[in-house]
Length: 281
Ligand SMILES: *[C@@H]1O[C@H](CO)[C@@H](O)[C@H](O)[C@H]1NC(C)=O
Ligand SMILES: [Ca+2]
Ligand SMILES: [Ca+2]
Image (tube, rainbow, N blue to C red; front, side, top):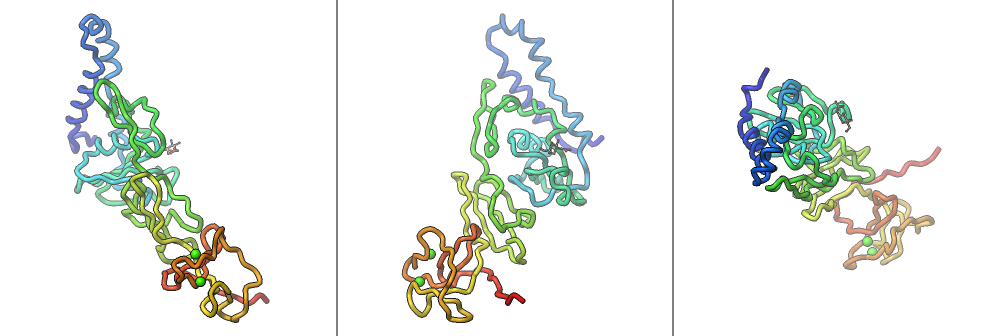
């Protein structure tokens, strides 16, 4: 086996420490509980280690990443979050990625990758996480162990973005959904990574750019009288979003189709892709 490759000592020490915290100071209770505690504190790492998959990683499904982690730090971080299904670890740089999918749920993202190790949540004994083994933290939270067998839940990610017309399979390799991280999804049927989402510290996605499209209508000639650019004819049909067009800052001239299907007027200088017009035969 490959046990020797990683230093499991700190983890065992931590497990012992957490066990020690569970033990009440009263010696009477101590003597009664010793056997029970000894039992419940035996953390088995063997299965997890025996199932490590060398030479593989899961690509582009990252919750967060960390440097200077051992593989056990990496696994433990994963086990403390409900959302985490697997980890990818690069031993050479002590670099850890925790993922919101595993090789079964995202088979096309499970890649051969030299130097990497892939591991699944289910292969590990969750008691590694001490008081977090039985926490009830939410999907977008991580459990943090506290002294005296307590724990707290802290907000850690913005969730998997649900953007119409954004393809979450086509994000950047270093993209992640944790607080402070960014995701650059590709717009569906477009070849650019035009969407850019930032996960705020409040746990909400801030959409910097998006997959809206120019539709070729503007009010360049006369404010609030929109015409089609190609024919200069007024719109016979429109589908403006609520309170649009609003000519915000008195300089919104060009119409876009938003992800919702509704229209908005924005500055023509903004970068968006466009829809082409095609005559029906
Ligand atoms: C992968 O994730 C799914 C869904 O969370 C889970 O049911 C499954 O046990 C995980 N692992 C494998 C090997 O399928
Ligand atoms: Ca206008
Ligand atoms: Ca507007």
